[in-house]
Length: 318
Image (cartoon, rainbow, N blue to C red):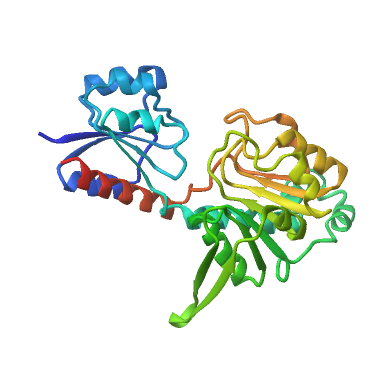
């Protein structure tokens, strides 16, 4: 009998093909949260795969006695009661390496956009480009280059390290803070099989905030803000903040005040405190570059995620 897998928030065809070629049956129906337990039990699902949309809490785990594995396509597992699932004997897996480069590239999409005002220009040019071209040109005349600037990275796991590689590649200086990683060698793979290594040391948080031109967050979900009013006050005047980590690690009210006062020049946000209904004031702020939590949403990352999930399922549930 085939082992049944429900990928409730989707899975790449690479993942489907890998599982099906190893005698697993894959369901890709998107089942509403309130009907999920009935569907799992009715179809005798052994493995439930989710991304960020579906939650797997104690009640669902208790009601689905046939579940043997819960998988998260991505890194953060705050939408899963991980410890409870493990106590019940379930395997809980994620894909920490698969989306690192995609998230790092999104960080720089926001950075490049903000330092040259693309996020605002793309809003204003369709409205006023034909009548106020010269005014808009003047408004966006004081952009900045990233080369030679200092990027502060808070959280230096896989995504933080990938972000550092891109920054080093375009000539930025790096500061990072991570209470678990005191030092790290970063290796850049260049054209024609050339490589270059950089030895980096962790800074303290206060120094990083005071000295960085731009700060980017790469931490898991927290009980308290990582960046609140105190931390924003420490940052350079005219600096920028990027959050492509988790919603709730930045105090958005304090962030908006820092933007409105001119303390911060811009922010780039892919995650929000109140997903999927972020603050409309934040969304409408002309100093904020915004994306709807798409850090891992590239074809390449989703292929890697699907294959990584499939490989782990095959090794654990057979």
